[in-house]
Amino acid sequence: MYEVPDQSGKLAVVTGSNSGTGKEVARRLAGAGARVVLAVRTPGKGEAARAEILAEHPHARLEVRRLDLADLASVREFADGLLADGTPLDLLVNNAGVMNPPARLTTVDGFELQFGSNFLGPFALTVRLVPLLLAAAEPRVATMASGAARFGRIWFDDLQSERRYRSYVAYAQSKLADLMLTLRLADIAAERGWNLLSTGGDPGYTRTNLLTTGPTLGRDKPSRPMYTRLIKILPSQGVEQGAEPLLYAATSPDAVQGGYYGPSGRFGLVGPATTFRPTSRARDAAARERLWAEAERLTGVSLAATVG
Image 1 (tube, one colour):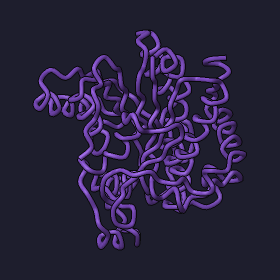
Image 2: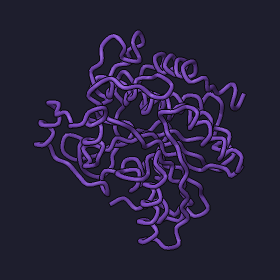
Image 3: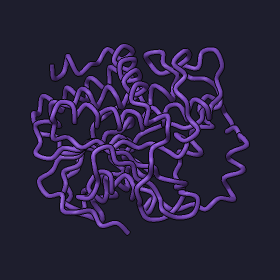
Image 4: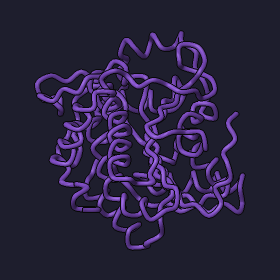
């Protein structure tokens, strides 16, 4: 199991840290000495996760703050709170997400739920927090992508799935967008000479509630898309192992700019972290730049406004 290096004196923000890989990442960062902000949509669940981590690490420094990535006003309020504190941010872990709601749902701002929650919200959060990241000595942004990114395509003519909604197509687009966010931020850091490392992780097939909560959204009973039946025969792993690629991306001294990490075992679904090659669509620099510009337009959040 990957051992997180000493994180003493560092401040980390982990989104979606009340359960699954997010809680595991927060637990291990706190255990390694980091001060961790649990950024969660439901504070009560965040407090329960905090109590659970404190039971294992009584001296851990943990704080719960509300963040709803499906609401750009909430993203702004969360970021403004951290900016007002003025503490340099050593690590931002973009972990939270939603997967495969059966019907097309929208965020508070009218975006398709998966594209809005999985990509536009984390994009806005990341850009708003760049000033605090650049104030840290060795800042990192680690963003959770997915194996679904391999099958994704950015539908620039229908980013919000308004013409046709297919849950898995929309999910794959959102996770490809996350991987492109990782690589475009790495491009920008290199272009501007920032000492900021942008990395990505793929959890493989990790058993979390992500697979079960998405299909229940908007329905009294969960849907059972074909893929949920097929994946039962695939190798899977618990969150302790599944969080490793993201933890490696976030903390390993061997992680590199634009590095993408995922499981080394069967079918790239299980096992210790190894280096992954981003999909060819994510490696398209022009598409990355176009997607970034579109995200700035849709969210109203831009680097020009935050750092000049």
